[in-house]
Image (cartoon, rainbow, N blue to C red):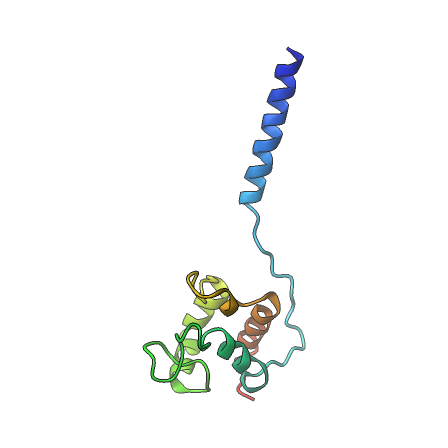
Length: 124
């Protein structure tokens, strides 16, 4: 009986641990207060290394998707209509899962993009 009680308690603890892990969510604790992030000084380099990297060739000049490696009208359209924020910040599905690992944004790059958008996506 004692073994059965121990086994039941252990099973409940293990199942609770797995259940807790499935509900984990990355919480963005960065605050954008007083951050002045511009396309030319910060964001351009992040997007060149991710969205416009030679390994992905997605958002480059002459491609099917809007170009994000330079300040242009196509990029402004997706910024103004909220699509960029929706995919990159809210949905976090850009770059897509099939991209090379080097294309993914790290926490600091993500923070800078989020603050750039919140700050009105300044060019300079």
